[in-house]
Amino acid sequence: MEHEEYFLSMIALVPPAIYFNEEKETENLPLSNAEKKQLKKIKLDPELQKNTADLLKEKESENNTKTATTSNFTLSELQEKLRVKLESIKVSRNVDRSVVMNRRKQPKRKVQNKQSKAFPAEKEQTKAPITPPRSPVTDENNGPIFNKFDFGKDKKKKNVDPLTALRRLEKEKEKLSSMDPEQLAGVKEKQQWQKAMQKINGEKVKDDEALLKKAIKRKEKQKEKSSKLWKERKELVEKQIADRQKKRQDNIQKKINDRKDRKRGRAGFEGGMKRKKNKK
Image (cartoon, rainbow, N blue to C red):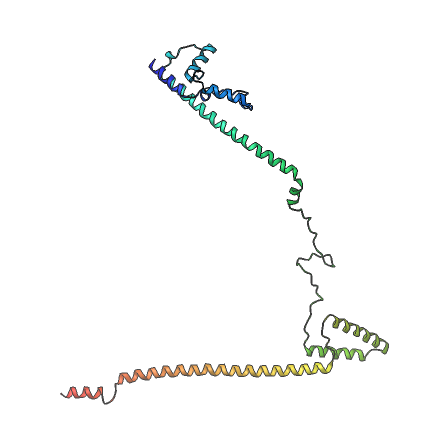
């Protein structure tokens, strides 16, 4: 009986709502002001309030499930029963918290859904546009171009030296001299058109024999001048190398002579002193 009274007193400390954990269908429904006041009066009335032990006794009498009285329970059985009940209460509390958090999140989700439905055009604009695949670029011969720019082979400008241009001009003159007058007129007209197109494209037309000869002479003089300067520079470098080698050899020879002089000793000083000591 002492154990029973002890555990009944412990159970009485647990609130009935937590111990029995009975969820009513009307619990989640909103209450009117009158119902709230009535509920408050019931909670504050001490006569209407019952502890957990009293409610437990009433529940056992109503369900007629008294197969054995509490006095027949051992101490270990009562402890196990209390432990199981407390664990179930903890689990139910965690479940209730998750339900409350989900209910709090529902209004936010509804607002977000309404906003997304109200502004569908903005979502479509924010999506990245799908660019169609680019077709490979090809040249005139239907070959793929791997570079960003296709500059063409004929657009490269070559700087022809005056000597090569003069030889080409002399060969053209020889060909023209062997042509008929009618054929010669057609070729000259064609050459004039070609020269005009070259000038339009910014190319230099080297067809003046006198200017080409002057350019060749100027180039030869520049070449002679550069070769002369190169020769002088080469001679200067060779002279500097020879001077350095001669200076090195002189220094080596001077060191050799100094060593020989130190071995012999200075005449009239060290040698004379030694001789005097020997005589004494």
